[in-house]
Length: 482
Image (cartoon, rainbow, N blue to C red; front, side, top):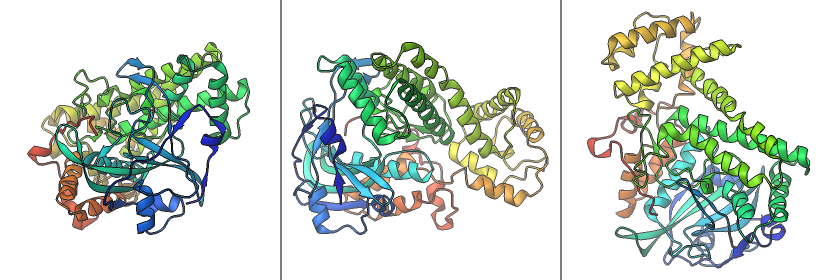
């Protein structure tokens, strides 16, 4: 790997340099070939394993942990930081640079009484979800590999340690700006330095002045809204939308107790540390705006309040428009050019999701059924999935009127197959792969990973992965412990 060290060189005082604590007897548990290609790597080897396990230094790497703060479940935590993630630097690839981080490589000054380790189950889950979201065309950090070990670590029970090797366009979070605004160590000068660095690295077309800052914050608002629209459309619940888990670039970031919906449920909670449902699936759009408001508060020393408010006021528009594009594609309806039709389509979409919830339907499988639907027929193949037949018939009539006559049904169905995935990372599938890894068998993990790189393909020999979960795997709620 060839590194540059722009963050390390230009932002002294924004991090602490650390030394990884290696893993004894490391082994490759998972490897993503297409993520590896982003930084010019091909096949994993023993030397790379030693380096990414933290057992020997990688030439050109700097090894540092970033400091930041954040709002966690609504309350402000004045100092957080990378408690178990160590960044090596920005690795050069064929199309640009990616931060490389070792997640679970030992204690840092920000470990907050933790051991700085990640357990194997959380490392595997982050690897799988990062790559699954990418292949669903959703902005996300990537995962290069999972490295396992027999090193014991304690959470609720004794588990084994692992490292996820994460790739990110940037590790800068909303919480970075909060820290350098609100902390005693912060100042307007440091806040401005961080903004200027962010623009220089990721928005080089913008000027380093008020006009550029305003344009940048507008981009952050739009990108965050679009990301959450993607989550809502595919049925993804992040689970821990704290401001320190929000990427400034609008990428899915920092995965803990996430879930893809099985049965559609607006109020679905995937995190057992969130009994009140602050981060429930249906709450994510509102939380996105709340988090942006906290970011805006941190930017007041540099950007005028009126300009920040004006940008925040565009969030709903960006969210709705992005959501409409995605959901119209799923339904196969054409995009209109009127606010009235937007409202009517939102009602049509909402009517269908309400029917799905009331009839306890599987989210992914129900949308996939549109790939087999003959939209010109008065008799829908979807109908038999519903208990409320009268409700479905009313909705379907409105849908067919909105859709109009489809001239080429086969092409229409094929287009639906490109936007309605057949396979998602259901929690029970991840759990089965984890159990196999714990027993020393990585083959199920590799097979599941391969499946998730082609989520829109039929893959007839993999039909079992598309089924609704067995009873034990329905509605799994995950822990934040990792």
